[in-house]
Image 1 (tube, rainbow, N blue to C red):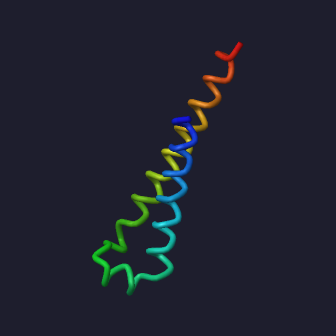
Image 2 (image 1 turned 180 degrees about the vertical axis):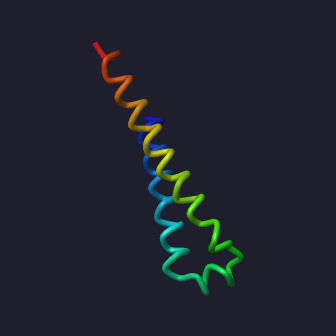
Length: 63
């Protein structure tokens, strides 16, 4: 269950970061730092990878 949440949160972070890059004027008016949006994208990728590793490691524990 936690793996599913990590994937969704990671995907949400990636989508938000890409939206900031696509609409920099609106993001700037909303208070987002356009130059740092790639950090949010990287964090989203990190969460997705962690979820994949957790899912792969727990796959062998099921009986």
